[in-house]
Length: 136
Length: 258
Image (cartoon, rainbow over all chains, first blue to last red; front, side, top):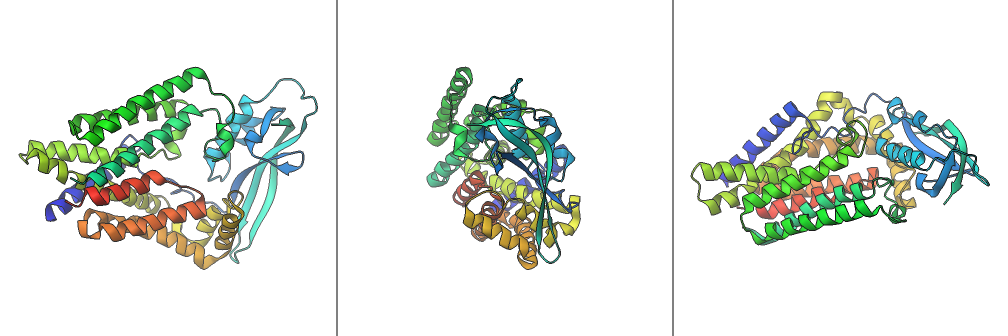
């Protein structure tokens, strides 16, 4: 048992030290997910609205006129950057040049959230870009 | 050597591969959103056959891993394969976004620990069978190290303010817009409660630090129970079901018993 503990302890120490030195290089990592989010007083959550209701990005089959790059999650206190990057890619891939016939109004932006010291969760919508789209 | 542990670890490796393979296969669809819609529609044939072919090769490696034949070479092959598909996944995105946003491979990290320890033990004269058995403790050490690293990074970056209620509450509230209604309600309720939000932060950081005890064989079961509880918390409050971590952790309970 002592040998097992010693081997495990050496492995743990080596893994921690090397990871801190080299960073995120397989199989090492600093596992820094969410570590640097404490300076935020607001949280930004991407939203998409089509025809007046909230929709997921892949509910839209085509969009026109949206400034997809303006949704960049790094310019906002966003902790769900993956969802935004995937949404950006989807919208970019499904952007069409011409006006969409029979398209509905589409708006993309961020819900800005705050949690007060009394626990009150407040939300305001911050539209970033508008265009038209067709639901799938 | 625990055959059950080996089999469970093989599942962990397969999950690791599958995770990356799915991201490569469905590269143009929102995978992280977790909607079944990601499977709708045809896939590019070239990409489909490449991923299926590579997955067939990886399945072959898993069979070899389970057979126990030349385990060092098989482990090396598995690690190279995991590294390769991770590279493909990284290449699909701009900058270093896959790495920056946390592409973790616990099964690969623990297998690397096993391989290095196994080779070192054999080189130092330990009989091969004993080396292969004992080296799984290094896998346990790497697993412990991963959680401790997560805690170290939080404390280094943000200090102990990381556990403060408003920080945790914000993280949880941001995830109250998706998931089943019951889960959304739970997230909002916890985000509104200072004491529950602080408790969530303290529990998270505490378990990550306490995971160092996973190096001690006698402490592994209680540590694993706490870590499983932590992951269930991630799933309920943050929406992340990180099954690879759990499967590898349970496998190591069996493999590191020697």
